[in-house]
Image: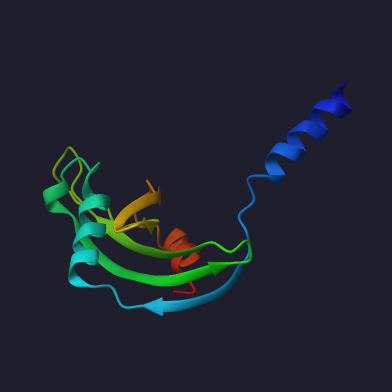
Length: 122
């Protein structure tokens, strides 16, 4: 019974693995794309109007399964409930049509390690 459960879990996880990237080219974001990314990343912050951004960049990604998307990453810093800035946190997302979708936002302050992992090749 345990073996059957382990095989079932392994099969489910295998379907969650992202297809490998076969080509990635840097993309210059337009002003409207940059504004849309910043608005989306700031939306759930405690004080969205205090958001400061840096290192936002994008790539046109092609995967071996045939999918293609413009993926982006960057860092945001904003004020917390006490009114102080908490440090830059990394975020990553992609465009679905013309709309940016944030897939990951690090909740830790000064997440330079996460930013390097997310955006290292951008």
